[in-house]
Image (cartoon, rainbow, N blue to C red; front, side, top):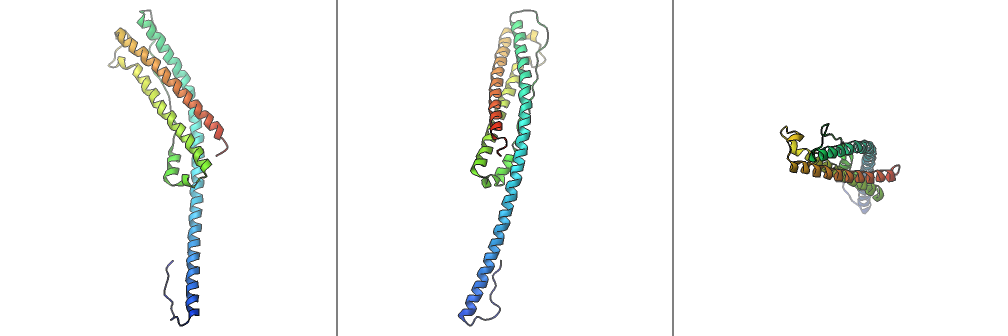
Length: 209
């Protein structure tokens, strides 16, 4: 709001006070309108952020359920690989090939990152902000462990690079593959435990956000 000089000369205190009151009222109205606009913007920003967060968490929960099912299949494949490698190590007759498959989609965090960047998180109540933070922190922990697990899967077959076959391996290389497969099972168990913890967090906050 622009403040203009009076159009007529001020001759009395009454004129001065009237002009001052006019300016003050105008400024208060302008500030009030600005506050209303800002409050409406904050409400819209918060509402949109919470809708996006709920949708993303719901999608992540479904994704995690599918990923956890895939862990069971991969675990069986790794255990088969260990049996096959143990047979090769002891020079027993073997049939079949190493199983080398995995699937993991992971959780997204775009809505959470956007809510923080736009300041929407600061507009939330402490309880809501804390609850969302716990969920997304645990999702990040699960995603990090998933990367460790996937890298571990690829380490199992490192001695076979270059088109080598199981029959081409030296005993020490077979031992390395067995050790890597066992470590992958450890990584898988850790990922499963962390995912279960995330499941519990989802269940605890379901319907509360």
